[in-house]
Amino acid sequence: MSIVGLDGTYFSDIVWEDIRIYNCQRLICMTFVDDFWHGDLPGHQEHEGGIQNAAFLNISSISSGKNIHGSRISNEILLNGYGGDKYVTNPKKYIENIIFENVIIDGMKLTASYDRLRKNNYVRNLVFK
Image 1 (cartoon, rainbow, N blue to C red):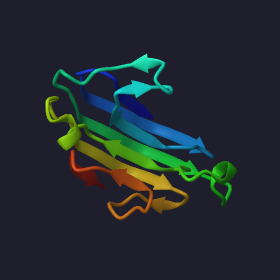
Image 2 (image 1 turned 90 degrees about the vertical axis):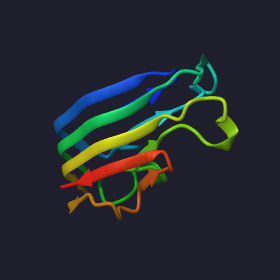
Image 3 (image 1 turned 135 degrees about the horizontal axis):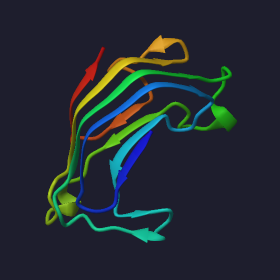
Image 4 (image 1 turned 30 degrees about the vertical axis):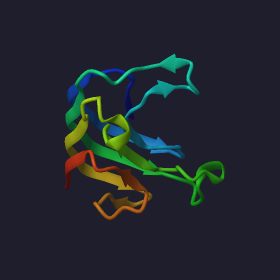
């Protein structure tokens, strides 16, 4: 379940619901990048954008007890807004107002302390239910 913004784009009011997954790599990814697939798809971040009001409802992911193929990103949740000193001329893009309701990973309910939740300083207002 991914949103990868290459340009200044707004994404909002997106719902993923009633999904069952077995042995996944990265479970959820929301990010803004300058290029994708090793530079084959160039982007630019000069325009405003962001991701807001997304919900993950009744999602479960189970693995076979090991990280799939030894992957470091098995069941990872990556949330990376865009901004910072390196991109001082480009507008900041926030990921905000994201709801995780009844998200179960390997039998455990997702919380803010999940060890595979990766986020940067441009992510705000995550809700775990």
